[in-house]
Amino acid sequence: MKKCNICHVMKDESEFITEKGKVVKRCKRCRKWMKDYYIEHREAELKRVKAHNVKHREERLQYQKMWYEQNREKNLQQKKERYKKNHVEWLQRTREYNSYPAKYSTYLDKLTILEDPIEGENGEILVRCAKCHQYFSPTNRQIKSRIWALTSDDGRESRMYCSGSCKHSCEVFNKKFDPAERASKFERDPTWSKEIKARAGYACERCGSADNLEAHHEIPIKISPSRAKDEDNGICLCQGCHRLAHAESGCTFADLKKL
Image 1 (cartoon, rainbow, N blue to C red):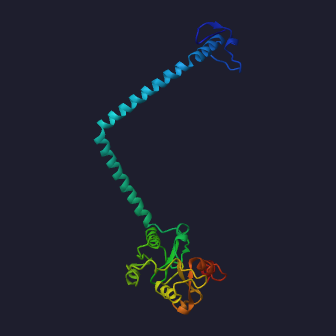
Image 2 (cartoon, one colour):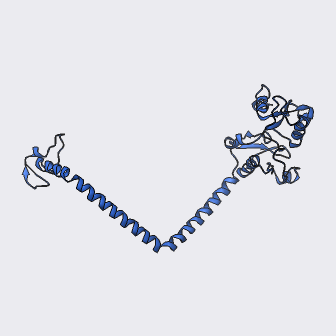
Image 3 (cartoon, one colour):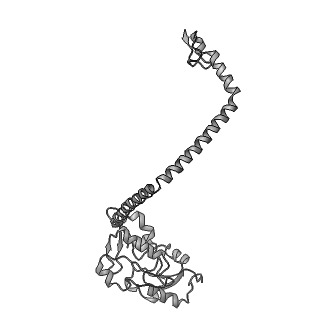
């Protein structure tokens, strides 16, 4: 025997077993009554619950509005303090990140042939100094400044130097050039590049295009450094033809790095 949780009548235990074989605390009669009651009063109960929720939501919004108005100055002060603290922490993290050595895998595709990047022993990126051409490990700040100079259109140069003496003794340091005449990703010397383009009449010598012109060394500099500024060793190409030229066997960047 077992007592029902609803009608409080002692009944046989079989009355408390559902059709699925689950044992419950309500007898068969009470379960049927509750089911019928729910079906009969379902719509009314849903309306009552909905009205209660709407009223509760309005009261909650009204209370939140009142609380916000009462604590407006306090909230603004806390917000300013929180922003100041987060800003100081962000500046500190940014300074630390900018002082770290730049990673090879992060910035390899964002630099130019002028820097000639290679990978160091610990995964850092090594680039050539714009003045003495010696390899050194730049910081994230130096790399980001160089990328900004390459992607901006104001003509300002921001090359990378291994020391302050190289920086201040370089001829192009703190100079500003015409963006149309500045060296592209595949060019080393802006002056030499300008001469080659002028000699070709500012047109590609392969396809005749006048857009995105670049100067190309027919004999790579790594093979013949003495002819780096020789006008007879230069040819004016558009960007597409220049890429095709560096895709030829013996002139790819992978082949040149092996020299």
